[in-house]
Image (cartoon, rainbow, N blue to C red; front, side, top):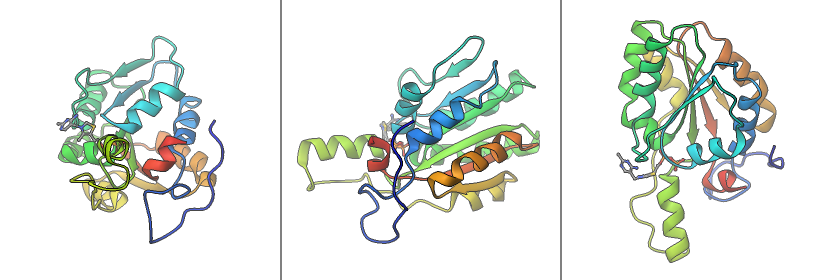
Length: 199
Ligand SMILES: Cc1ncc(C[n+]2csc(CCOP(=O)(O)OP(=O)(O)O)c2C)c(N)n1
């Protein structure tokens, strides 16, 4: 468990701490709720890195992740895992950028009523790349790493997923319970930030 974050702020600088939910807390609480044979699917980026840090794995739990770090792997891989292993808990953890690359595969999850559980870390940027830019150039010369992200709850609902959002530390437990208990495909958007992912 990482330290608690203050209340989220609106407007101004959405990249600066303490804006947003500490994503590490979401992952550590998820880890405590995984079933003994859960399949966790990762996309690329900060969200994936925090999963490696905060979840202790116990076989026969399985991790599906792109060795090359390819964005867009997550949604179709989660769909494939749920089709191949019906009855096992399948949880996808993705950044906003990677999730958007293959969101349309949710249509198959809805059509087959596949109970994939998607956790989308909305930090409104290509976080890992922006981090490199900040390290190299400080607060200047950031190019092409900011995202104008959609409302992921509405996006998921449009595909037929149960949707919810985590806006504060207090909401993590209930949102994860609803996500993991949903009868079909479900999505939770985590309102986080790059800084809140680095705490
Ligand atoms: C298909 C593809 N394009 C580009 C990259 C380079 N890349 C690696 S991580 C990353 C940003 C990931 O952003 P996001 O999915 O939002 O995750 P975050 O780091 O913000 O958690 C990019 C562009 C990649 N790995 N794969």
